[in-house]
Structure formats: structure tokens, C-alpha cells
Length: 97
Image 1 (cartoon, rainbow, N blue to C red):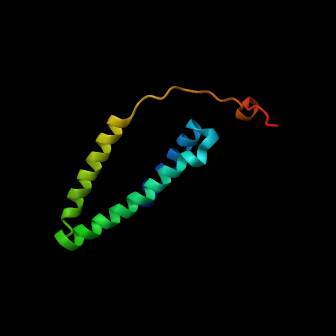
Image 2: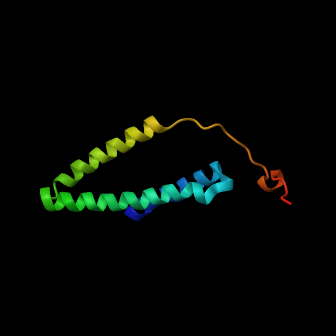
Image 3: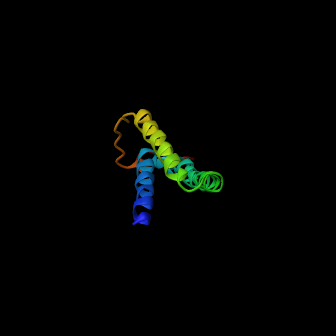
């Protein structure tokens, strides 16, 4: 169950990024993927430190603080994006000579 819910969001986020910037999809997705793996590394480091120094009871408390900061950041950082329609991006490009 954890795997289903933990990894189900990544393809949806990638599809949204690709739709927002189809001409530079890989470049646009690279910071998100880097953040995903960087966040995993930071979470493991913080969890290991908390477990060693303060015991396992502190991990859920600190996780809740991280989650609250994430939710507040997502709410405050969300802004509407103007809808764009791309019918055929290849047809709109000018040929290079």
C-alpha cells in the first residue's frame, strides 16, 4: 500500500510538467526528480539522526512538522496558470536552413 500511494504522485507531476513545457520537457522535469531523490536522502539522514540521538518517538513529531511546512508551502506557493492550447507544436516551428 505504501508503494502505491508514495509513488503514484510522481507520474502525475511529470505529466503536468511535460504538458506545461512540452518543448523542454526533460529539462523541466530534472529539478523535480532531483528534488525527489534529494528529499529521500535528507529524510533518511534526519530520521537516522533522530533515531540515534532522541529515540523513535521523536520521528513522527518531526515528520508532522515537515508535513505542515510542506502543506503551507504548497498552499502559499500555488498560483493559477493560464491555459494554453498546443495543437501541433511541430507545425508551428519554422524550418531551419
